[in-house]
Amino acid sequence: MTEIAKPRDDVVKKSARKPLQAAIIGAGMAGILAAIKLRQRDIDCVVFEKGDSVGGTWRENTYPGLTCDVSAHWYTYSFARNPEWDSLMASGQAIRTYFERVANEFGIVPLIRFNDEVVKLHYTDGGWDLLTASGHQQHFDIVIVATGVLHHPNIPHFERIETFRGSVFHSARWDHQVELDGKRIGVIGTGSTAAQLTSALVPRASRYHLFQRTAQWVLPRENTPYTEKDKARFRSDPGALEQLVSELRSKTMKGYATAVIDANSPELAEIERICRESLEGVRDPDLRRKLTPSYRAACKRLVISDSFYGAIQHPNAALVTSPIQRIEPEGVRTADGVLHELDVLVLATGFKVDRFIRPAQVTGRGGIDLDDVWADGPKAYLSISVPGFPNFFFLNGPNSPVGNFSLVEVAQHQIEYILKLVDGIRFGEYAEVNATEASMQRFEQERCEAARKTVWVTGCDSWYLDKNGVPASWTFSYDRFVDETRAPQMSDFEVKTSCSQADALIAAPQ
Ligand code: NAP
Image (cartoon, rainbow, N blue to C red):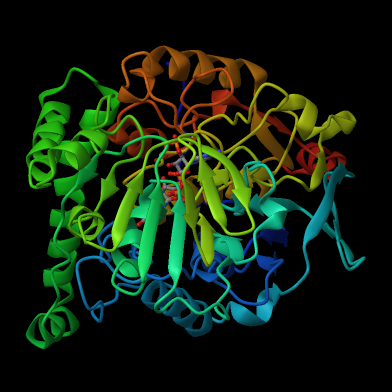
């Protein structure tokens, strides 16, 4: 049996703590978390952020209707609960404000270099040489990558899009100068983003067109408001708030977490039943048929909305299912020959999800290039560490749990695990640590094996699948994720001591 590393803070260390310098890449939810946790251990850190403010995805996405469909109290740091959430699911703006507030309250903002994108990381002399776009260079002992998954917009090629006379932009690059009220608006895509846009824009548009390539399963969920009385109770009774978080978590876990990893589970059947029942509410049989997916529920990420079907049935709204042929100056021409005239065209076409730290160039031990290591797709042992890249850790990295979970909670489990590895460096037990090739391969084999049972491989295309059709996500149970990230199994890691550490060991009195 492999041994479990003990929590370092409980171990009496004879050696002095080594002062460490950490680079954190990204000042979104995970980067703020990493900075707070490192500072709590007196580890110096610099956060590199290419944008001009904190918040990550909640800074980049500002589209009308933006809401986080994961319950707000669960999508909150456990050490900074927020009794003030207005409703079960919070708006994008409220979430952005929350992360800004936490970053301020925990003193993280002064540690951030804004508008400074990391372009190069090179492992040398037992640490990382970092270079930014502005030419700033600095050496760090450890690097924590917190760059997010849904970050680089996917902008498909649409023939002659440059000829469009109206305004066109991706949903994550919203142009707030563009007038929407009374305009003819088109949205391409039917994912979570497009569903939220549809609910928000149909009432404002003179005519609304939703260009659907694939129908989506939509799970209804009412966004119940919290009353002032609820909030007062959460403020005065943290126990009640924790109880609520626990209930919200277990509700999702009981149904969704089992459903996605077992396509034959009764939980998935139940989700499908609820979705179908809600779809039955669409009155026009032709529209209902067009909205009916031809694959299993949750194969693509479930859309959560109790307003989408209502909005798409509005007299102003049209669901266009004929494929897009080209864009013309006046609008979108579909394969059936119809020109859909538009003033505004929104590409709700998703994200390139295999980038992570890239396009930054990352070279590890012996000059190995992360691009080469990931030629077949991004991989990391337990989503956290890559062989050959010492002291280099991911939050919400490759194959991390994604979907309808709280990524805040996921990142919290991961940072605690990473800190245990960092403690080994801090207390002089070793100078370098990274997963072994063998543990990486074993993890990947098990992950791909487990993928066979998941709903993600039951016959749909989605951003969960990598270029080989293998789910690029955590294919085990969520319980296993929690279990495995409790503490590192050190036999899965390769560690190296520095010359000075070896000398100290030799010189140490017996
Ligand atoms: P998405 O789920 O990847 O959906 C992209 C949509 O664009 C799909 O409907 C896709 O059609 C369509 N599309 C892509 N290329 C196209 C083309 N060439 N022609 C026509 N249609 C095309 O993207 P998203 O809606 O932005 O959501 C991405 C992820 O962000 C979500 O899965 C979720 O994890 C996260 N998100 C979360 C929330 C939340 O409330 N928590 C809200 C929004 C987004 P096909 O299905 O046919 O490929």
